[in-house]
Image 1: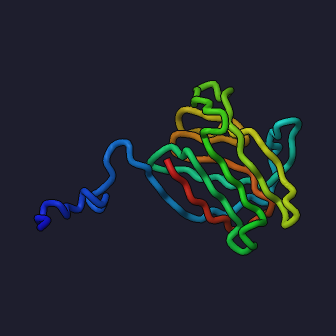
Image 2: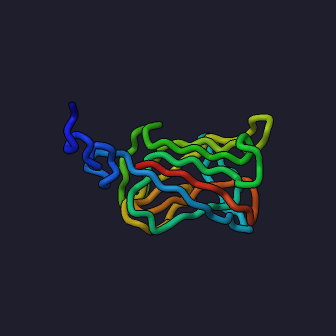
Length: 148
C-alpha cells in the first residue's frame, strides 16, 4: 500500500518546478499599427509587430496566433532548435521561425535573432525576458504561448 509521502505535491510539480523542468506561460498582446522590416531567409518583408517583455524566463518555443481569426491564419511558430544558435550580446546569431499569413498557407520563414539581456535591438528576436515577432494584422489581439 502506498504511503502518503509517495503522493507528495513535488512528485506532480504542484509544489513548484525544479531545475531542468520545462516552464510555460501564456498571455495576450496587441500588435502595432506600424510595420517594421523583418529578415526573411532570402530577403525581407514588412509586418506588424507583437512585443512581449517582462517574462521570468527565456522562451525556447513560441506559438503566437490571432485571437479572432481561425487558428490557421496569422500563426507564428518559433523553435530555438531550428539551428541551435546561442544567444549573444552582439545579436548576430539567429534561429528560424515560420509566419503563416493566410488560409492558403502563404507565409515566410524568417530570422529570429538570439539576444542576451532584455532590450530589443533587432526586429525579430528573443531575449532573456521577452520576444518581438512579426504578425500579419495591425492592432489585433494575439494569444501567445511560450515554453522555456
